[in-house]
Image (spheres, rainbow, N blue to C red):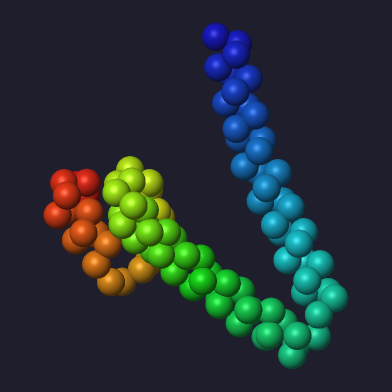
Length: 100
């Protein structure tokens, strides 16, 4: 029972430590950058976010073509959770019975 409590405590501690690190990083960025640099930084973060969604979708298509449907489904779920709007990969996976 103590191992379960310890695991829960570490899980909660990890979450809050990561939140604190992210907050400190944002404070540091706000202190070091000028207004113009902050706007460039914000746009670059948005572009990186879009690139990550496209990467996940592309990897899903690649794994679908390689007939590794489990991996294709994992990447498709990531892409759709991040808001990818086109249903192409979802329809392909549904056609082979891999999408719920």
